[in-house]
Length: 450
Ligand SMILES: Nc1nc2c(ncn2[C@@H]2O[C@H](COP(=O)(O)OP(=O)(O)OP(=O)(O)O)[C@@H](O)[C@H]2O)c(=O)[nH]1
Ligand SMILES: [Mg+2]
Image (cartoon, rainbow, N blue to C red; front, side, top):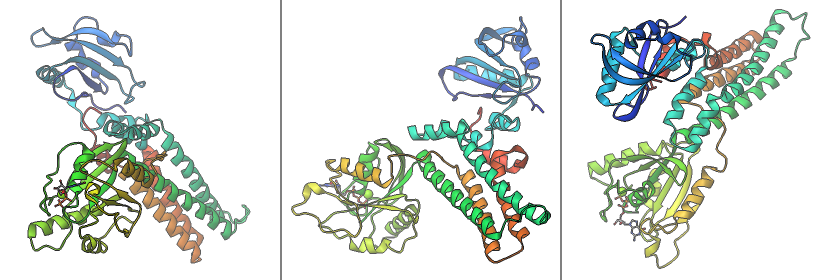
């Protein structure tokens, strides 16, 4: 079941020392043959770089001198017959070579199509396939580590072991239903106890992986506070450039500014927001509306205020705002370089004394942030939104099963819910349980050539 022959430029487009084209599918070598006259490429040793002239078959002109590699099926990334052509990295040259390949009957690959085929041929499961994408998107060491663990199949193993236990429970329930005389009937209490333990483990796994996902995508850190407190000054200092406008005029920032940064080794998505106060100005009101939206994304909030200036009204205003339930607060008393007296008590802790202007207190801020993020040991699992959605649905089914059992419904109803949960997990691990629409959704976020 080999796919039609596809080609893609696997390296980033533009000018570079070399460019790599990737080819996969049955009948590839027949299509390559006209570009490589002389020794038939199919006879070259596998997985070995061979220097060869690449010619335009319509003119016989040598277009480039390239390195050609052959990966015979099934020992290739996709499991199909594959080739790589390493050309010089000219922007026009690569277009010309791509065109020559298309003229030979190759089709340009869709985003993620090579990895898609690897999944189809059982080279990897969906968890590993996503790791390929995460690895190239990773913006931190932790992100790389988590993606690699997934790629090696460690996450799949964890999930597979869990699914086996779930299957065990389901089979026990079915046996009870179908052959009640033959199997020693498990009493309801035992079944319930096992279901409860599975639910607990699934929740823990889900939580750990969602925590891990923040290490891949960056922790959402939102800077909030009254106007003129120095929020944008802090934002600029943390991203290392004068991105946000800073002025002594209260109400300077109106839009939400968003930057992905690695700040002192911590992957963050940093958001600067409009200062919060009562205002009749529609532009400022819109700014605060946006701050409110940003607040919902916060894993951590830096609340920036100045001891001698009013902050109570702003603080009260945000109390009714919708938030992530686990949001962590850090209270920052800013402009420490101007203080003449120690600051008052703050409504939340921990507190950091800072001068965003001079940088005094930034080390303390880092310490507090690390402690808030429990940054000592990043989790060993990271779910993508795709995985997390499936795991959450599986949990929902198990909760249903639990409810049925508690209400004393017939065992087969609960067994059905457990079966549904097993099916949700299967999507991530087994090919036969994946349907095409799901694959399309997942792979559309990949880049071409992967
Ligand atoms: N002395 C001193 N001035 C500061 C400090 N941080 C910020 N400022 C000054 O305070 C003023 C306001 O700073 P911004 O960073 O624009 O404050 P903001 O909270 O973003 O203000 P809005 O966007 O209007 O809500 C500017 O003049 C800054 O230079 C600080 O630590 N010490
Ligand atoms: Mg500002």
